[in-house]
Image 1 (cartoon, one colour):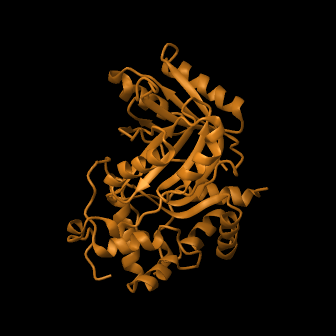
Image 2: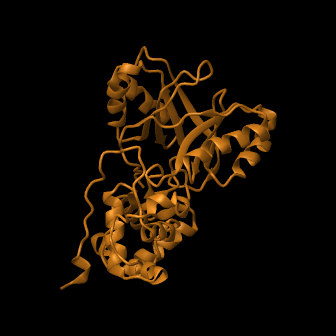
Image 3: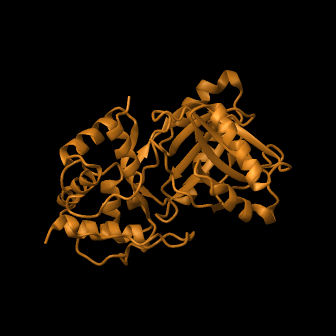
Amino acid sequence: MDMRTRHYTPQPAATPVAAPITLGAADLALIEAIQRGLPLVSRPYAAVAARLGCGEEEVIRRIAALQQAGIIKRLGVVVRHRELGYGANAMVVWDVPDEEVAELGRCLSGFEFVTLCYRRPRRLPQWPYNLFCMIHGRDREAVMEKFRLMIESCGLETIPKAVLFSRRRFKQRGALYRPSAVAPATRADPIVEGSC
Amino acid sequence: MLEPLDRAIINRLQGEFPLCEEPYAQVAEELGTSEAELIARLQRLLDDKILSRFGPMYHAERLGGGLTLAALAVPEERFEAVAAQVNAFAEVAHNYQRDHHLNMWFVLATETPQRINEVIGEIERLTGLTVFNMPKEQEFYIGLRFDA
């Protein structure tokens, strides 16, 4: 059997839930071991397994289970958009009537150039906006064109809105976790059984 | 400058990375290159900071952690000093200056949900400024994807 064709295809992540999922000590060790990146070697999962003192197959199985559980949202590259030539990024915010947020959120998140779309609380009087989208573009004019397209397509002409271009990026490291800090009570039942 | 193969690699690896024994070899085959070439280029893209990371993106809340977006209105003349104070917290994942009265926007990622409020309190004490905390209430799914 050609080992390379042995896939462990993850199922799509379940609908988001607020509650944390119970993790075993082995899952926590794995989460910590790979959070800074996968090893750039021919058999990366075997390298991780060697570090954790378990089998390659078990590492693969656990990663697949963590993906299914929605704990790993994605396994892949994290790009630095400016370095990729996306010189402008804007946070586009809207003050949408509460009862229309869901519908407009779905409309706005449908554009391929929208990379994040969240509902967040208003902070009155300083901050009246409750729907946030990130847009990236080659330059500011490209971003503004996309902004106008969103307004037209989703019927947002009369909705109060603002475009907050970023001027400088001070820090972009991504989140790091020390999952061993998760409450011990939640560690009893691993989502994947195993000795690793 | 990025070569076409670099772009192809970035675009391919924003999707799912295979869970098999030799995943780089599999992706290399899909892209019509060799495993060694793929690994070398990935290493260079990371070294050159085109990529910030290659690995898992975790769902902070499901890991039992805290995550929020917060903003400050920083007086222009204090901006550098306040940025240094805020960025000194390990929990600050990124921080952007933006064109608005609320001109500093940063993401906090903490080990526990409680820690969010502690960090916000510490930042307010240090800077004397009000932190506007705007945690996500609902996410409209898209997936982060850039055409390289």
